[in-house]
Image 1 (tube, rainbow, N blue to C red):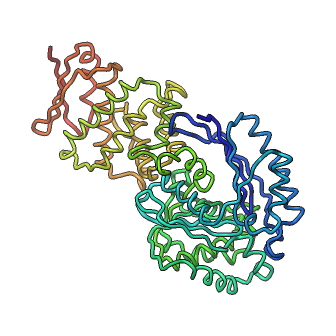
Image 2: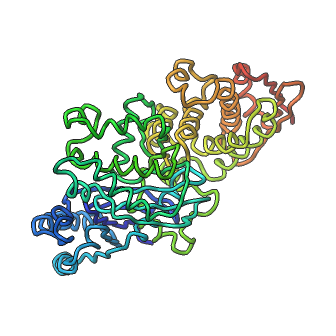
Image 3: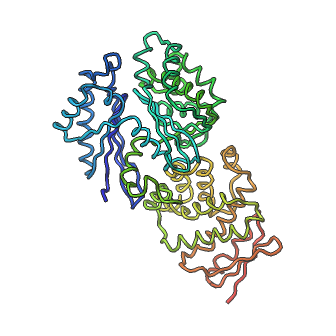
Length: 489
């Protein structure tokens, strides 16, 4: 198993290097990312796709720098692909041969359907949704992948891209002519109506960041950020006509100003054609897809059912307690759920959340023992991002933060109220987490206690006298549940 794998993605607008580290069979994390805005397609679209000298020089310099980084990480495998600008270029073989000869990097030019497939594999495995279509707006092309139940059903690629449209219509900012061009390309798609539109790539992440800032969204993550497309359609359209200084005030970066309008125009026309209602932002795309198709090549490009790569990675990195103790805490939490679910009116989704919280309950200790719960909260919100919505991630993080405390702070609840369940439901889940952590506080591999619900009261019988002594005074502090603790030989 190669510990470090380097992925190079050669787009029309920029070239990126990502280095992935394997933490276990399917566990992984990104340990490095570099980007160079070489714009290999600059000047090409107006000249029959021929790559120009200056962009090729910039690209070679960027790849030379990447080569040193790859060596520094001792990556055993390098996978390099090129997309739209390179596949459109009649002189691409000259550049590719030069890179191979001077740097030893083998660039594989992939077609649009393969590009769409890689983005689809990444989102199907690392994003939380049941059904939708991805849109990946690049510099020279736009790719789509239809996904359902974590499977890529179909892929499409169109000659629509930010750099391409800028060079064809940017001189006079001719949006009306550009719309005609975009609509003609979109006619090549089959008749599709899809509620969920999943946005891949820098243009769409930039838009998500602006909207997130506009609404003062409380979670600082773009991956899995959702918004009602129809609600923000007019706002997105207004961006097309803003001056650069106004775009900067909104939060768009300086290097994206000359292409952002063209990307948003493609988005607006595509959403209209697909009748999209919800936009889901993906922080992953072609690079993650290339990595996943490599490590999942014997798994039909899918993680095993009920496997969460982020959970595996964070446990690989930060789990302190033994697997047996972790399983004991998990089983305790799930058993309590089954006993109390009707009493608290909980759902099967709540059961899943409790399972995650039990497994991640002490991940913060490796950062700092005294800041365990707060560290765990921030680690989950900032690292634990795949396969859970923002609401689910926040709920897991909240249970980890307050799992060892008698109650959840009302001030904290008010801060995150828009994304958390009702306080009564949150308090119910907290009570189960709190009890399961207390009962496994001695880190025993065995379960020396039993539960019974009688007349709305939870009876806990403990068969371990030292554990009973440790916990005797702890259970009277839960406001939402009456608990009776007794010792039995």
